[in-house]
Length: 275
Image (cartoon, rainbow, N blue to C red; front, top):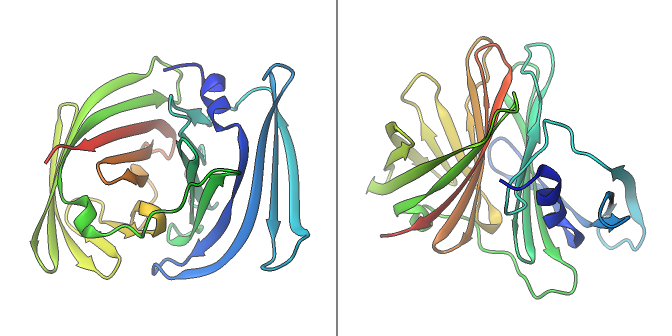
């Protein structure tokens, strides 16, 4: 991996988009237009972040927030494409838990914020679709099961909270539809092999088997959110966001936590369809 700061700089520019709230049931709620600027100053040793959010039809922003960065906190991990993952350092039964993810592909960015309440229940998802100002980039359709079917192979880069050297692993994922209501997923991640069957219900997939039942929400612009159905004390936690960048390339960002609630690692996966 390149340095965290150099990877952060791959997000520089002006990005026009929207913040869209999505309910735990997968319903698209309100959407707020936005303009985000990341400007490199002092030969890119300083970055000024500014985000403006607008009421629909209003020329004046309702939110105008500015912050400057010379360094990145250790919880903010940026990968070689500019993709990033950040969030809660410690999962606790007395505080809310959240994670943010961002993907970058030329003139497009897709960001996610997953939020859980103090009881460990999924509370809200914010989907942020952004396009470089002046470009002709457009959003992709909402993700479908059909777009995920097939075999995907790729590479995962994992960065660790304890600052040990990042590790690279091979990945293979095969998804096939068993019938109208079920899919089968076979995942190879390094030396681990995981097989699971999911239920299809509207724009959600439910994986009820295994020690930690999970749900995957299929989202606009080729996005997906993969979370446990309940975050429980003294159990490991894994949360994930995905983006179908194009018909044959998918990226995923994963955050893992130990059974003590400590943030352990962030992983970026780039996988391509081979069949």
